[in-house]
Image 1 (cartoon, rainbow, N blue to C red):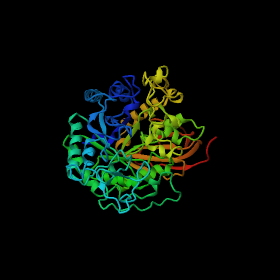
Image 2: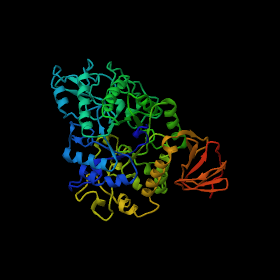
Image 3: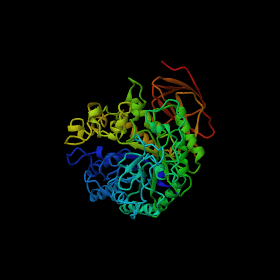
Image 4: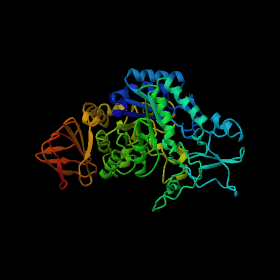
Length: 544
């Protein structure tokens, strides 16, 4: 029997920006429960909840101080239980974030660990002596800027933090710590969650020898010095796979659960790690990376990502997405200046359903939502403030959902929201797009229903057609049927010549005249045929 997660469409909810029911300007668990009907109406299968755990919020909940507690900002454990029950009533599964590579420095484990070198939790975090001259143990850098080491006067040692100084890294070479961490995961499995999204899954284990990282192969020095290193010792260590096997064994105890890991790496290596971490049946069920969360929207890039994964991990499983809470929204990222962003958004979902594997959506993209322009004084993502203004942080994609354009703050909250709701976002409120037959929202519902109805898209083998940029043509074949999606990835119209017989089916923004496929700017079409048919397409002169 085919596992449910292989075909899953996962909808990410960023709790503090989804729906506020208390008027304090911060979204909450009851707000998510209130809006689950909207999520279900899209035709998705899974809700992924970003962190709602007890936290001092130095990194918006990704600095956990109690893995089994609910931050009062978001509600109570009873509120969470009601959310799970309502989601299951709607045939939606729920997975929750697990931020396991590090904790908050206010977590009781770290408070005890830093107290002395001889206490029971002394080695639950990564501690190291200074060099004789007092400098850090090695050259490892933090993702958020500066050294990855912070000196602590209590132990007269440095502790490792791959992110903020307030996010000390756990020591996965310590069996007792791993045992305790697994028990916190069991707590949520016992409450009925259907799986986990594992944050920075390749950051769990470090090189115990603390060897320096070599330089990366940069040509122009990056804005963030972190990217100037090849992080071959500070992350993605072989022992990471041992940790994942223990986590998989735990989740397997609970039946049809799922773990999806976030791979934090650069270049083609991130796709390779996705394969390594999902190969076989004893590690992650699936993984995603930042490969398709970049500015590169070329046909060659998408093809390299998918073919690279399929060739490198025959029995692995990917999840592909275009947006999430860490990157600029793809409608803004990919649209050229002055281009119709709605056309970009409509094409994006029809492109995504052509890809093999599970799919990830981020709240608001079904509305065609665009990046919010955040002024310096409005910043809340202070973790990245060192890189302003070249990098403006992640607040622009985290602004509140817009439900009703006539209501205060577009229906998100009756109080002042934690991030502003601005006019361009309110113009894409649910109540407005719900009334439009040609809206991005309508495209999402049609596209996801089409994918659900077509086994070629959910289970089919994948091949690409050799076409020049900007055309991507991908065929999915299953039990004698072939479905080919063709996409014009630019704002200029294109003509294609079709050799062979096929019929247009499903979502389309193109026309077929005899043997000429006319793709407008950001056009797309699906063609159905049988296995005896070959599709040979040659790029023609663009139509006017």
